[in-house]
Length: 304
Image (tube, rainbow, N blue to C red):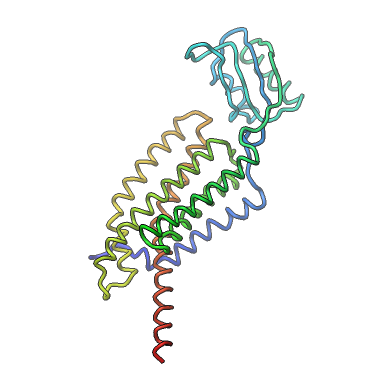
């Protein structure tokens, strides 16, 4: 079979490229941390009653001038409607002067209103829930390794999980570097990326396993995996293009509250298809070659 590109032969270039991206991400995560949204930090709840109905878009336009466009805005109405007089706004913690300034701008642009309630609210996702989520994620990785080891082999399981960790760090790093807000929707995006990444990786691994059954000793592991990657390339391209259509449409045509969610998905999907082809499979080949080399060295020593 004539191969158009030697993915495995260039694996150390892929590893270097991944390191080039991962190192700044890890440094930013360690030094800057994350711009946590109100789901993690808590915030201020404003309960307003306007003299005339207003829409969510109108309220968000006012908040946008104060970098509060990511706030949660709800209309209090008995039926589905685009406008209402009662509005709940959940935003970052505002001190007295900030709250006065924002409310004055709303009165100027949206008309008069009564402030029914102003109070500080706690985080939806607290530190304990965050800790439990991290533990659950690590446990899921261990279970993935166990299942993939059962269906394939241990080296496949480790390679797949390393690829997932690669994708997660890139998404986290991008949000840390550019100080994008991390909220509950971002957590959902991370879980979606994990699912996409492992699925794309397993498709390639399954083809490698099938090809191993007819593997000839004259064919190297590099050639076998290259052949397997090209056999699944069309499927990988169709899948990533399809999901990118959805995530990009959501980013450009969705509301302000879904932009970061869509961006996390887009970055994660691109990282996922890259890691499946250029990281997971090459890592498996590297493990396999090390194992074969050690086995041959042990065999030579045993024969002496």
